[in-house]
Length: 137
Image (cartoon, rainbow, N blue to C red):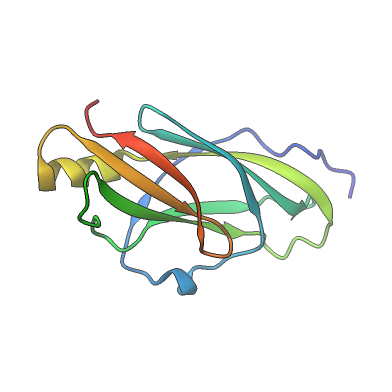
């Protein structure tokens, strides 16, 4: 395929809060290369094999409740749908997720401010990164 190795411009999607089991998430292989939070936006760089088709991503907080610790924690899982992309180029893609639903859930449960530790799980569903999200925005 003669398609750009660096994929499309990132679009912003809302994180989904659900009780879906991580093993039930539709996933194609990928690696999370970098992650950063700016305000309520999670910026990810993912690397995967493809290059001929657009790939879709969904970020899910599951379970739909915080783990009680100090600070509270939430597990995040990235769904990657490659749409059966037959190409094998190594692609780096930027994806952005709006974490506002997590902040709003925190505020309903704990009040107007605080911190949330986010456990970002990789393709193998093991924790790959821990990020801090402030509910004081």
